[in-house]
Image: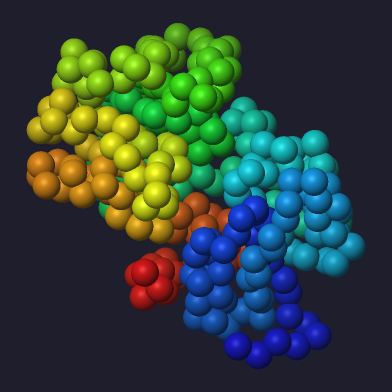
Length: 287
């Protein structure tokens, strides 16, 4: 990779950031298309977020992805926010348009792209169960409701259950009666009556991202054999996905969501079609 005085910079803000695979596939995409861009990981502590966002302008950075823990906290520091990101209340992509910082959220569309194209699963009219209430859960729930699901039941771990109540209220206020919504206590998540009727289950938490916290939140034996399992964790195959495969349940990890949301960010920054196969090959090679 040749770096010159004309090289344009994009990157990712997060803390910690060591686990990110985004530099791998974005830099591969730039090389494939011959674009004079470089993608760099920026370790931004929460206390430094405001200054880091200001630096996007002062350093003439083209744009950044935004990951944990900044997706919601970054909103007040941007000049403009897309309608989708406003509804979701989280941003995962920032574009520096001639000094104006515009926030987008490509997570939801990235999830749907992966689900439909890789999983061959159409969520329209389906019964969905989700665990999680963070920025990714917001994006996924909004995308699924807009895609026409019939019902969404969700919960969150007990320490963060307050966030699930906030998400429930937000979805109710935004979508009214467009979808049946149900919030259940975390200790009721393994109800056979509920899980046996689920068409799509989504783990929208970070559980399983590290081997030290890779527990089974849900008993896979309680699902119907026709269920589709989606785990947003992308850096390793979680115990939950392994259990689903052992039971021959249709399943997908979060690598596809990472790829599709990243491709959308790439297109926002470069105004070029993302080379998906090159990006996928780079990811698979790294893993």
